[in-house]
Image (cartoon, rainbow over the protein chains, first blue to last red):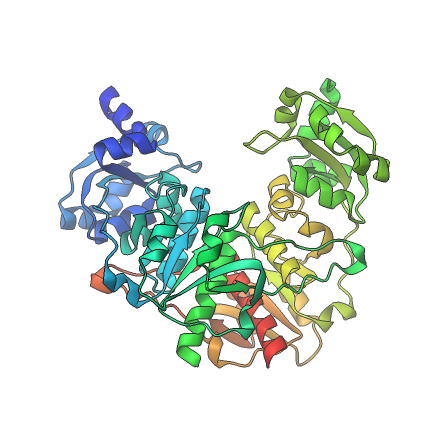
Length: 260
Length: 260
């Protein structure tokens, strides 16, 4: 049974203000929690159903985590998920590493005001899939420790170095000669241009694309070609969403590195 | 002001059963409604706020659509969107064209039990972006006229030919020699294999991948290579989600067609 104070504390972590105050965040769902336990993150406590605890006794013992068994009703109270959840973890938000010179040895994603938690989680997961370890978020991006970001990253957040910093400042701090790529409607067909690595790749906001202020910092404007034909005069698709564009760009950079 | 009967009818269209009974669906949000009006779909009626009507008088007159002005409260009642909505359209579900021989002249997406409305909408939008006009859905896929699918397709549903049919039956009806591609963990690196077009591309379910029964029908098993290194022994990303995998595969097929 959760006490009133526990309930209050756990639900407060749904808000950025309290996550910053306590230096803690929550991870929900079996996949996220399992990945968190296997990571270098400090897990402080688990709240789980009896069935989850029975099924995961070995895992819990291995990590010697404080555990409290709670009812499905209490789980529903502290969860942001729509489908019934079996386990919630409270973990410490890791210290954000200062941007350092060695991060410039590979591709870096620079996210410009990504607002949707599902998109940010998906972008983190995609970066992990393509072995991109450094993500720099503008201060206008949704907080990476938002429960929905954590959940949709499906554990990849534990393997990604995330910084929040003004992107213009960050881009200007990169070594001389390092390219900055951005996806723009008037960009050049990505098929036709050289993709150099290391580089910074800017992913723009879901509705407004890349901020005006960053445009002069882009050294290569690229575009994912559309084949939308607008047949029968019926209009055509105007854009790919931010997380799809990100996936295709990451894919294409890695493809060139391995096959060229 | 909406009458009780109107309210009942409009909210009933959130359910597949009633969409099939009435042969109607709802589209919500400005982008979806505008695209619908510009399409060949039969729009039966609009329900809109006074500000939307003022801003879109020309559009409404051009299409001579029956319009009812309703209050923000009534709009919230008939909408499935979380953010406040300005306009809802009721449209006729188009007759599903029988699969015909000429659909086999280009790439075809075959969706195997895609359950999440957001994923199906995104896949429809991506197909439109890459000029893929035919999508075949297994009967286990979410209904394409679900309001969330319509909304997340952002108008692309009006430019896509969608059929619901057993995929094994469909694949067996394809012309002899036509390849069927499927993304599988033990597939060959997509970089290394020829991608022929026309072809059928199977996209598997979000959790379970491609159905057992379809595996023997796949002529080319492919895999999107991961660069997830599991550094510091911290595990690695296990998969890309269905809509991202779909986007990368569509991108790669079109890239080969244009640059090889």
